[in-house]
Length: 150
View 1 (cartoon, rainbow, N blue to C red):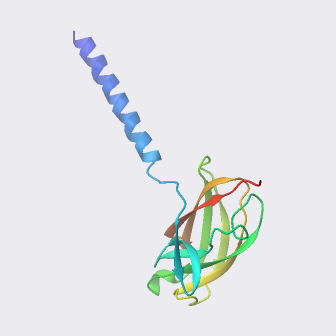
View 2 (view 1 turned 90 degrees about the horizontal axis):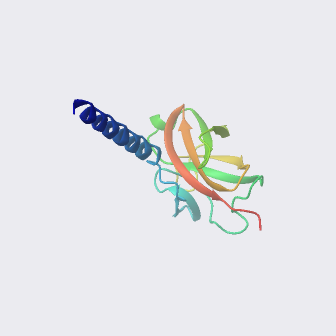
View 3 (view 1 turned 90 degrees about the vertical axis):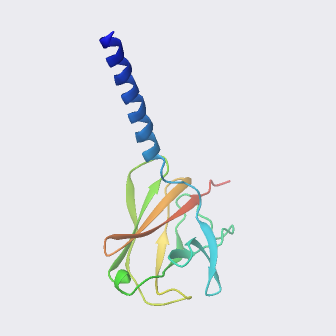
C-alpha cells in the first residue's frame, strides 16, 4: 500500500512540475505591440516608454529579408537613458536571439527623450520579440509581425 501511495505522490509531483514549467515558457504573450501617436507619427511599442515609427502600412510592414529604416524612440529618466542602445530579436519558434540594432542614442526627437535610427531586417515571417537594452539593462520589449511575401 505504501508503494502505491508513493507512486501516486511521485506522479502528482511530476505532473504539477511539468505544468509549472509549461506556464513559465508561455509567460510572454506573443502578440503584436500596440500602435500609438507621438510627435505627429504613428509608432509601435509601449506608449511613453519605447517604440519606433511604424504604421503597419504596406510600405512599412516587415517582410522576410527586407531591410528598412525605422526610428526608435525612448522615454525615461536621464540616468536610465545613458549608454549604448542595443536590440535583440527572437522569433516565436526559436529561443536563439541575435542583435538587430547596436547604436548610440541621439537626443530628444518627436516627443521622446532619446531616439536613434536603425536598419532592421528579419530572416523569416512570424512573430518577433525585440528586447531593447540601454547600457546592457533591459529597457523594454516590442513585438512585431513579419508578414509573408504574397
